[in-house]
Every structure is written in C-alpha cells, then in structure tokens.
Image (cartoon, rainbow, N blue to C red; front, side):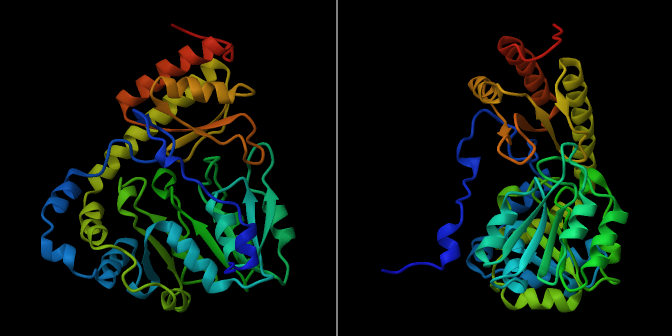
Length: 358
C-alpha cells in the first residue's frame, strides 16, 4: 500500500474556515471593503491572450523590488505568503532540525515545519503575549535551523521590539530568521533595512491584507540575494498567476487607496477597543486590522449567536493562552456599526458584559 512519509501521517490537518461564509465575514482579516477600483479596471482589461499565456514572474519581481527599495535578486514573489513559508521550510530544513516559534502564533508555521520533517520548539509568550525574548534565546541550540517571528503577531496583534529582533538574529547566525511582516502596513515598522547586514534574515510581505488582494494570492519573500537564490531553485517557474502579476503594479500604485483603508482600520480598531473597555471585556492593544478579545467561558455561544445575526468571527480559544478568546477583523464603518450593535445585544443576552449602554 502506498503511504506518505511518516511525519505526514502524524501531521494535523488545517481546515480553513473560508467555506463557512455568511453575510458579514470578520474572521480572516481581509480588507472587507475590497480592492482598489483601479485593480478592478485592470482585471477587466485582461485579454484572452493574457489568460492563455504563462506568467512572467520576474517582471513582477522587478516592480516589487522598486517598491521595497531592493534589488530584484532580493525578491521572490510567491503564491501568497503560505507558499513562501513552504519554500522556506523545504529550502533550509531537514529531519531532526529544530524551528523556534513563540506561541501563540500563525497556524501554518507548525504545518510547514512538520511537512519538512523538522521539530517545532514552542516558547510560550505568557498571558500578556509579550514577545518572549529570553525564552527564545534560551531555546537556540546547534540544531536550531529556523526561527519564525510574526511581527505583528497573529492571532494576538502584538509586536516584538526591534531591539529584541536584532538580538535573536545575532544569536542564531546559522539559522534562517524569518520576520513575517504580513501586517506591516498597520504597524509601520520594518526590518527590511537590515537585509544587507544579516545574511540569515528574511522578511515576508503580503498584498492580501492592506491591498485587498487575498483572492489573487500574491506574497513576497525578501532577503539576501544568495538565500533568495536558494529558494528560487525549488520554486515552480509559474507559481504566481498572470492575473495577480497584472494587478500587482496597479495595486502598488494606488497608495491613496491604502492610506484610506488604514485610516478606516485605525478608527474602527480604536472604537472596538473602546467598546471592549465599556463592556468590561479583556483585549490586547492591536497593531493590526484585528483585535483579540476574551469573551470567556461562553465563547462558543457568543460565536453562534453572532453567526445567527449574520456575523462571522474567529474563535481562537484553542490557541495557547487564548482560552475564551475571539479574533475580530476590523470592517468598514458601516460593518463596524453592525458588529458593535450585535456585540452589545449578544453579550447582554448571554450575561457576559459588565456594563451595557443603549
């Protein structure tokens, strides 16, 4: 009987909640207002010949390189950051290698590590979700071949200080250190400027969040030319589709759209955090387009009641330290009003909130 590698059999299956869509989906940290209208116009201008042709990823990488202020050989465009993470794992990891992550963090990290046959080393961040610098440094051994740090982090929306990241990068010169900056636009701080100094540093970016291109699946792995070159060797030549590559320059060119979306998120995020304070709910100050909120023991009932009102949220209560927690994506102003009204009603019905205003 044909069987996979032993580690594949032992791997947990990751099931995306995207098949459970309702009227208002605030569960996947998407740009709920959609992409730039310019992107839609570019889509409508695609021809049958465009669709029938293989994509030119290298042309897109030259565009992205100019945008990031890097050389083209420092940029590898991928089918979303998800593919980038797989390529990273398969480039650097072998059976028996160790990969350090701070828990809780992005759910795909353990999947990619396990698929490559490596061992995951979890360092719990603590109840306040502060980046566990001391624990990460202590966990580094000669077997450490990779360290994955989402900054800002998902699902906590918290950040690691630049000086802490520097200490990790310098403490593990023989390990690939990825700083996953998927939510960079909402935070505004990056380590891209350090790529020329540290050969072991890589950075990932996505156009799924702030640019509203989640459905097109386009991300970028950024780093030292030699290291990106290694990853390029195992990358399929046509991994990014022609539609995504056609829309990327247009999306990048509409920075007013991005600025408007960021203002919307910052306002909605502030109002949601204020509502949580008003209702007596614990939350963690966010540097992303979502907020992690502790609803408590009745989190399942809360999720069901919100869904019955046409609002989809993300239950993160199974993540370490996130017992009773719900992750809420910031929507448009109109969507946020629907969310806030529903939260007040449901929390009052379930007897969760300490204070409810009309």
